[in-house]
Length: 383
Image: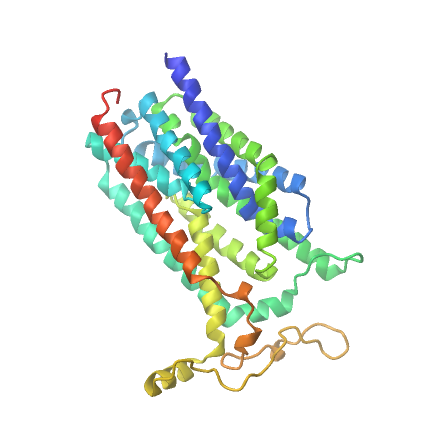
């Protein structure tokens, strides 16, 4: 009976890791594949290696938190571990049906919290620390990217001028291609650090498998997803990101990956998808505010104008050369308050309705997971 239940637990863990690999590969390597920098096969190989590296190093801290800090390890019987993993897998299914990437980290923590409340063993101090970071991290992601979007992004875009490699690859294009791949690998590392625990922390907490074996199982499952179902997500994300400038995509990846790597280092299970989305929203909002200075906005507020700064339409091209085909000049970047609103494409901004739907589901999925887990662990005799 024990061996059969352990086999079921490993199968569910592989299913969770498989889906994580399918979705995270698209997020990490979508810009690289979409720009033609690397192939889907190379993206899958790099995703597997760097996700495993992230899980083997920083990800151990998240496994420790989820496998024994929120509730004591003694509560993770093999049956309870399988049930927690089932809730994570269910959240992935629901997210796929709604077309929104669910936070597996938040859903897994919700299920573990439901177990702790049902058994009266939850550590509210640890849980409060996790939830506090869940609230702080998206705010930090938003404002860091908002500042970058308002004050730095046009200069980065002008300096980097990232483009897909053509028939004759220039040195600038080679440097840009390397930068795209390096940042994608960093994103894969971050995804492994935060997500390995979602697949195996309950099994490690129960003592059914060791942490090294657990990381290998999760890393292998993520790699399996990267080489199979990720091909479709790479197509989707790669094509969708053509509306989002490549420079913007890289800014989002660097900031969101850095934030999640930091949280994983201190043992906080957090969502890479949530951080990345808030980075996109913040960057888009920051770009949109470049059409208005603070003084213009304040004056408009006093006058009651509905569109501050929407004065005469001045057209600017952020990539201006020195007149001899050379490098762009930074002084030709339009200043804040001078940028033409019409020059901001839809890919520079964000869709408030879509963002609201995504955030709503991110709140609902861990809540449903916690309530369902509480009812199961509290009232089903088998637990």
